[in-house]
Image 1 (cartoon, one colour):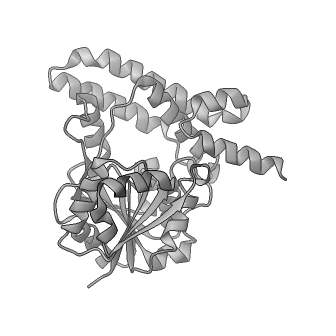
Image 2 (image 1 turned 90 degrees about the vertical axis):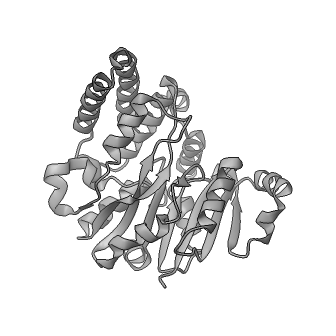
Length: 318
């Protein structure tokens, strides 16, 4: 049987994280190891004190780091080193498998050796969604599976590189060959890797049969900050994103959302949706032009202040 490890960056784990662990234990295709990259040991200790059964899990492996050292790329890169499985599944602590077949379904595309990554469909969580979020999820995670390769760039643009470490499985030998995740990433470490894989001639598989529950309801301010970091991630890698700009996908999503709301009889939500879209756009544009901003502005706009503190400290030491 193909060996699969699950790798989960964790910060202040809660009851939802315990649900994730329980669902992973029930998978039809058994998980070899669950590797936790935990930020701040005290929070993990608090959880274990309340749920001692975590200590008794033979295949649970926990590694700790400090908050100042967390990086979306480097932390995952570090965590992968603790795995020797043929395939490893990256997940976030707030993603819950929808059934017992998640691992099994994510493995299916790898029957083709050209597939480097297989990522799951994300369904909105009950109580953590809105009509707009539902439509957005359906836009980014449709009900049909598909494969994406270099030949799709002209047609799909930026969507060719779309991949999400909320729930994505990687073929280890290809990962090693391509050099793994980048060492520094404020965001988008999964898309950086997917772009490298596609440009090296491999394919990205979206597997709609593999499903997780994952959604957020962000305030407009948080949407601005999230899209600021998205813009920064693209500005830092022009070799990837200048050739496939994202703005057209954003416009397409706004149009799709407005039509979807009208069809649902929720037309009154179009105006607040447009306001939120404006926050997203201006956050994204600010991030794309972050080099023209002051440090004070950057720290106000970002969701990841420790990323900047680390970067500025590194630059000051050169």
